[in-house]
Image 1 (cartoon, rainbow, N blue to C red):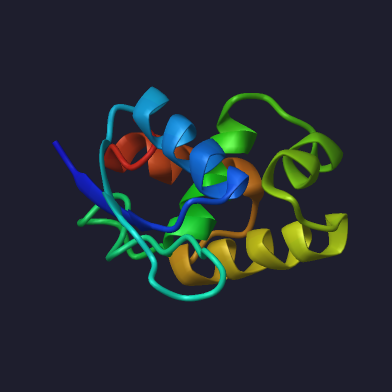
Image 2: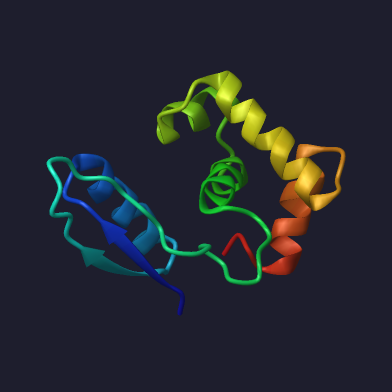
Length: 112
């Protein structure tokens, strides 16, 4: 099981922890001593993946059949930022289509 450390106490942190637990990750909390809470994920959600945690979240939304608009809303991003993430994912994986990125993520086991 992959262990993810989360820092903070904000509603965003709670949503992130629920999302990760639904995906089968062990969530460990670290409490922030600062004036505000911020969520940080230590390492990658999947150690063998070349993608960042945010890029994996984007692919998980698309795997779940969400439209770009729905995925952007779920992740708290603009549609353009989501599209930028998708372009970066395709470049990093060396594929030309979003479906190719999804297929690679499923084949490699990154999108459990």
